[in-house]
Image (cartoon, rainbow, N blue to C red; front, side, top):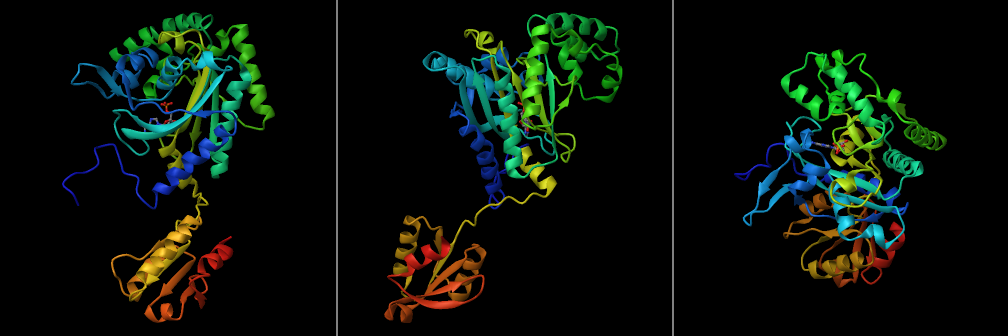
Length: 419
Ligand code: AMP
């Protein structure tokens, strides 16, 4: 072991498990690519003000969990704790909203950082795949995103997840509700920090996971009763479209989520096999975020799905992903046969066949062990005598059957067998 370890709250993705992460990212990306979303990549750090203004000063993410630092040049930066603010910043900077049709649909995949208390399913470095549809207010867009996330999870074989749905209202009706909630909260017995939160962002108190707080929240005014007609109608349309697509969801009037920028539609994907960190993904509409970070009015909607927790959910459900073998053909070179087999392996690889070869001058036994461990379907084995006869031994590692094949023909024979 080296003197160093992965920092607290982080872990390394290593084979064979790492391939699951690639498969999950790919499964989430596939329906997005297929639905008009273009790939975007933004830096791992941003001006700290982007998150303070966008995500919200009162949120735990910004006030407690952000890796903020000053650079040698005096810039105030932060490792990105989430993707939406950065993606919107980049879209505005490139004027994407002026260059093409709205909405601008983007997807991304990357690392995010939150200084949280580590526990199962909660890390300080984690991975998300996200999607944002910028610049259109249309219930079909909210529905599209929810349906695509559902499709992604189902394509992986996940079944035991639930979709929680709520509407947070807009700038007309939310302030009225906010006031009613604040007045209710002011009558409760809350600690100083929660009282402060109730003043800055009372909706977030509803999200408090502590039982003693939840107990006091029974009877709190619910946003649904305060939604204006426009918000109510919008929400009904989203619900109808999702229902028509055969995607089941649960109305959850307590769902507020931990970020300030959400308006109207909010949703979360939860998995019941994960214990307390049950959210595998979430998102919603953020109609005011663009203006909050200095842009024009651009109503938008998006989500981010956690890759780490999706992998945990797959494990909890016992889903085995259908991952093709990394190696189809493994070459075992004996005596002076290495250059010839190395050439064949190169040729196979160029022909698109996954091939590998034993390295380090091992004998037959050690090299065959490598071949078996690689998961390859075939081994090509050759020594000086085989080459003198112009052949290699082609061994089917499943049946154990072995036959000589001409060196000049082996690539074609293998391609045909593996097709
Ligand atoms: P959020 O941006 O908080 O809505 O997070 C979206 C998704 O990212 C969550 O549903 C989780 O799957 C994942 N996620 C958020 N924070 C963490 C974390 N600290 N560790 C692992 N996954 C996380």
